[in-house]
Structures are given as C-alpha cells and as structure tokens.
Image (tube, rainbow, N blue to C red; front, side):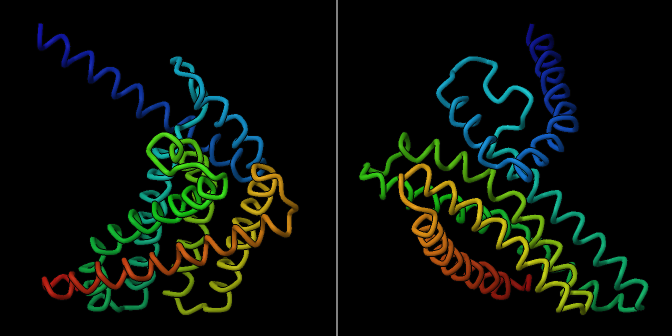
Length: 229
C-alpha cells in the first residue's frame, strides 16, 4: 500500500514538473507584457480555494524561485564559458567557489524585495501586518519581481564580461519596468495618483535594497569567515 502511494506521489511530482515547462514561459510572458492583468487574475485566484487556482500559470512564489534558479544557472554557465575562452581558468575556479553564497544571497535578496513591497502596501492600507493580510500582496509581488531578477542577472553577466555600459543600460531598463509597474499598481490599489504611487514604490524599493545590501554583507562575510569566500 505504501509503495502504491509512493508511486502515485512520483506521478504527481513528474506531472507537476513537466507542467512547469509549459506554464513557466507563458507566465513570464504575461507578467512582462500585461503585469496588471496578471495581478488582477492572481488576486481573484487567491480568493479561490478550488483546485483551479492559478490554472494555466505557475503559482507566484514558485514562479519567482524558478526564475532565480534559472537566471543564476544561465549566468554562471555563460560566465564560465567566457572565462574559459579567455584562458582565465584559475579565476573561474575562485569565482565558482563563491557561487553557493551567491545563490543563497540571490534567493534571500530576491525574496526580501517583494516582502518589503507587500509590507509597505499593507501598512498603507491601515491594516495590521500578519500572515493573512501579507499573503495576497506578497504573492502579487513575486510576479512583479521575476522580470527584474532576469534583467539583473543579465546586467551582472555583462558586468563580469567587462561591458559596464551595456550592464548599466540593462539594469536601468529592468529597474524602469519594475518601478513603472509598481507605481501603477500602488496607485490603483491605494486610490492615489500615479506620481504618488511611483513615489511609494521608489521609497519601498530603496528600503528593500538597503536591507538586501546588509544581508549581502552578512552572507559573504560569514562565507569568508568559513573559508568559502
């Protein structure tokens, strides 16, 4: 009986993983071109406890996590290939030794940004911040954060390759998209004008970056102390 349950659980896992291959690109494209529509759809789905919730899309936290892992893996692969072509294998080994810390930092850092945005939204609604009031805005923020993760990964790759101008342009494009989407979302949900919505988004994003910077110092500092950095 236990074997049958185990086999069925494997079947469910395989099906879930394979559906990611179909629904992840669809989710990313819809977030990129119609973020407000996806946010509205997600908000409605979060109120639905049925099995059809997020049907046709990857759930927001999982979507963000898959994006972080995908962007990290692609960036490291491209970076290592570039260094190999340049004959810098020694440096490549030193960089690779830090990739575990870098991945941990990215997972935590890219989760802090949507959390701070969601926290600020709930507070501005005059609600008490708890696990219930924070859930919906955090889920929506996971959708918004994914394209930013990709653009930052591309910018980092360009910087590592020595193309700082292109890296700056890519980071600027990603940041502009993200803050623009956030400004519209805050304006609509808080019933304020877009300039106020943008100011709220910019302020919360700045706070999140400060927190992420502190976390980075802690993680890489501990890594050096443990001989990993």
